[in-house]
Image (cartoon, rainbow, N blue to C red; front, top):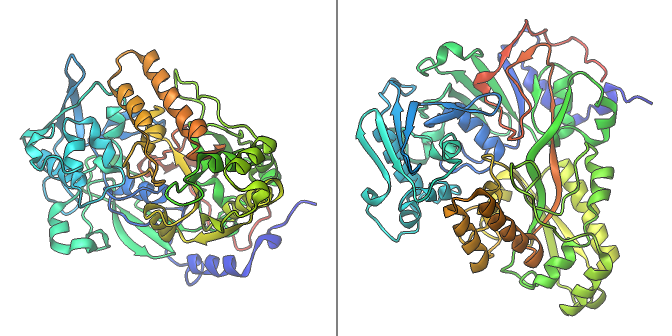
Length: 540
């Protein structure tokens, strides 16, 4: 029988619906409201690592380049750039622009912001994005302390010159990432850590921060000082902080949310019922769902244990019974879709071989295996996947694994601090190159979060950076990935993401499904008047 709306409404989601609705049908409403996922950890562009956080930062801050709705690199604060014949030096020409408080924005803002992002004390999780710049890594690791030695110069207020170690085909893609955005350093000096709060945050992007109600919503207001404000349609946007798929779906169908961006916010049990609805949109994205192992803890310091666990994850069963959106099961960390790159073979589902490996590691039939847990952030689907894998490990290996769930911010801190045994993880490409996945696991990278280090892996990534031949470069990356997923089994890939979004395409314009899963809010507009919130909620 077709499920009806009333079957979906829970007490918790009803309370959230009422909170979002305000005092009644005449309550003020944002021009656009979307479900953003978990409560952001921070809005500091140099510190963000999670997709919900980055999504907001991209609306608040703009770098030298930007990405349009189709995923193409376009001018941002830099109106144009020149690239030297050896493709190592980029000269960016900055357009006249100002901060949201009216202060002029100059090349010096970029230079000083980049110095702050590279400062070891800042502890930016994406500081490695700067490692392609001459002496960027040396400065971040404290090997040099004179920032003048880093390949970034500001010869005048409207010119920024960047010199790279090697030609880097995706450098302009890096320049649109939040980590390379400028911040208003006077605000940081004045307010300290509070500079990211409403009334204090000064931004240079299409939006300003109007309000931040923790575990409720972030309200963005159009920035009248933005250089391209004339083409920003929505005056006010509400980004709802939601982890419950049922609540998010209720909000969408009640007309209180215009867009659901995250597949995790669509109830998996309901996907088959809405797959043919006109508001249902799905497409492959460059993202992978995987488990990572903390190799600094026993028994995960033994590669045989990691391999055994990876080889008893029934990926096919997970995508058919739990995720149910057409996700391809994956034994590889990098997803298909990168031009010129073929991921190597990973570890197949092989319970018999896994039992042999576990016995060789000293745990025959699971005997003597220590108490360990799987950590995941609060999400209905994460819980279902973890429960399925827990049962598989019990059945095939005879080991008991407990489940541990945390809210988004706490979960990220636990991964950073290596306070976990096995961690639920995901990665979505920041730029269209397999390096965006593989560079994460170089020794000491902020997104490594495993304690793992391999000189062989590091050498292959380093060789790939300086390899001018694209075929040889991809071969080096492929060999590195083989070490990561098979020889060392630091991560256990599970499936490749399929992006699912819910929105009315006849009314919402500027939204496109792209492999990078990046959807600039400044691009969105209404093709026609948005309908009012219905008095009674519709059936799906």
